[in-house]
Image 1 (tube, rainbow, N blue to C red):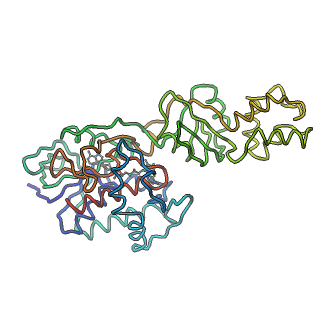
Image 2: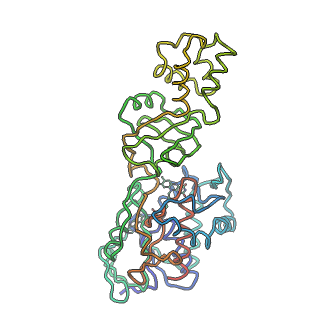
Image 3: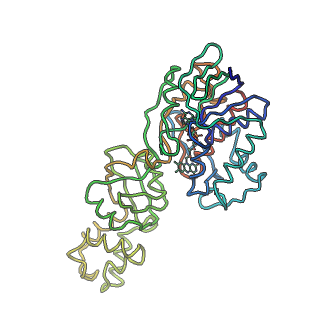
Length: 394
Ligand SMILES: Cc1cc2nc3c(=O)[nH]c(=O)nc-3n(C[C@H](O)[C@H](O)[C@H](O)COP(=O)(O)OP(=O)(O)OC[C@H]3O[C@@H](n4cnc5c(N)ncnc54)[C@H](O)[C@@H]3O)c2cc1C
């Protein structure tokens, strides 16, 4: 029998951080990974540069049924702790925007750092290992594709459903249910919107065009870029709002968030009565976008100067520019979603240690829990923080 103090299932961000922390305490730690190599999401993250944390981490940057749950771990392992680790390992990084920290070089450096820390901490990693069955008789007994193993503590670090090709799996949720945990309903998040109405045709034509915009769902807004795609809308503002969007509802897009469009168009009409609306708007928005909006909103009046456009038409156009109501038909789903919203309900998990309150010695860390960060390095910060606090006690 293969006996360990701690077995961690999943060699992603949270599992590796937990293993390193426990290993540094002298615990004998085994990490089991079903894929052929560890940390696939780390490698693909941030467009290959890993947005590993954010300078401004606040509990408000997270979604959960229990908004208080993340506070303890985030305050005990902060972004500064991870930045210190990155610095110690001589990894060059920069702030891209809004506090988001990326490697100057490649995500590979973050993964290499974690694997080297794990090795130094004496952690054993087994890849291509499928867990087939788990039993508990005072310790955890695992039947796996690589034989039988046992441990005092079992850490579930299997992540969420997003991007199956990078290891997205439902295993952690099934395990949670086996030990009596509830799940908060799962949904793809940080994901592009798709459309089936006339907007789909428009977005196809504008595919590749990106503009800063404010996008709103309910009482949540984000001001970042939106990107038109062949299937609908993407870009950071859209990914952010997708976490708050409810199926069947509209979102509102303000294409000129720093301009009161009605005041602006009225003023332009008074000052430059002979100018075309498309010329005025092309000073503020990409011309390609203006031409498509023209074909949609004022095709008959396209060649008329501003002076000849009625006050009502300008009002309607201004309303659309500042408050365009769009109804996504859905999202691209787990195939491209960066994260899974929902997960293991935190009501039965200790926020200080991540230990199950239903099953002693069982821990949940990272994305498998019902904690979802905004875009911008917050999901990794949650993985590092939750992995760390569990690693201190397993
Ligand atoms: C394309 C992409 C880009 C992203 N970019 C960023 C970014 O720049 N910044 C950011 O903060 N977040 C980013 N995220 C989100 C971030 O990657 C995740 O939130 C984070 O990796 C979650 O860490 P985790 O350890 O909980 O899960 P994961 O990193 O998903 O790790 C889970 C591991 O468990 C393994 N596993 C699953 N089931 C089993 C099983 N039954 N047995 C054994 N092993 C199993 C998986 O193969 C995987 O290796 C991105 C996500 C994606 C998909």
